[in-house]
Image 1 (cartoon, rainbow, N blue to C red):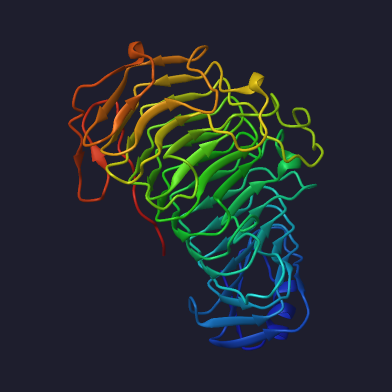
Image 2 (image 1 turned 45 degrees about the horizontal axis):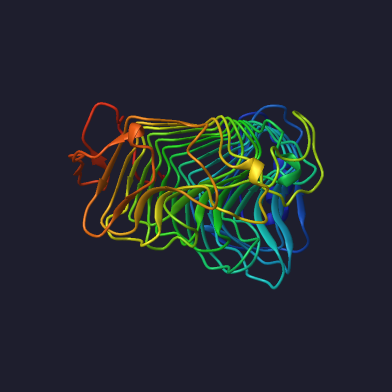
Length: 415
């Protein structure tokens, strides 16, 4: 591996175009202003690196840089691009790696997507995304007409997003049009803190994604399965943030959802009622824009710990909630609700809400533990016991008690 050290953007671009496989261009410490959006390309067929000489030492301002060749490694920059609206950095190629960057871009007036992934099998890891005050996403995977597969998003720190209202998701995977598309994204070991934009802070709008071992803290919004099917949400630690979902075939297991006093939506875990059976479209095809709500059916909700303490006076495990005008035919159906622990000292532990019914769902082996002024709700008595759960809070903030719970990996991994 050979390093070429440069001290101007023009020299960096020129050197990178002809760089051999496995070599690197290193941009020396300093502030560099890009005038006009730059398309970063190369001739090499293998991996080559466009990098700050010292992590965080090269500051990029002005207009964004797009990655438009396969196997670009873009690493180590302090990114402060400014733009009125639209996409900032785009990855329009495959097998690229965007890592160890600080992303805190200029806040204009329009909808701004800070980093957008539009190619396949790209990696976004060990970055810090922070201080966003405009509409749009910190990280967006896909678009209304882009089928994007195999994205890896891991060990990133997302924090301090203050956009109000719809359109300010921190991380969104897909769109309503791509609900039936297999994105196969892998989102894990990330830390989300104080992401208070759209009510859906981590929003999935595609199918077959795996969201696991993330830590989500103090976000006035929800982890949401909004469109799509067969997603996995497993082994996440969620505190002062809620979880809600539509769609079918999801696996929701071994999550800890704790003390949700900030979430805008109703309850710690919310099964939403639908106004249609499925999202518009068909398997493997891009559909029409769709603001409707798909029925929750054929999902497995198992081995989760939902501990509210005195955080809410609402329904903690909310089985049915009307997000819009709802057809009574599309309430939660044929779901398996197994071996969950639900506790709280205020509010209602588990209740069929807004016309939903436990009938037609399998409910078994759950533990409900109501203390203080909390009430049990109306879960079928054949589906739960009320003995003490014996949960013990550990130093890392997680709870342990029995063999049904597997260890969680809590906290961000950066470096």
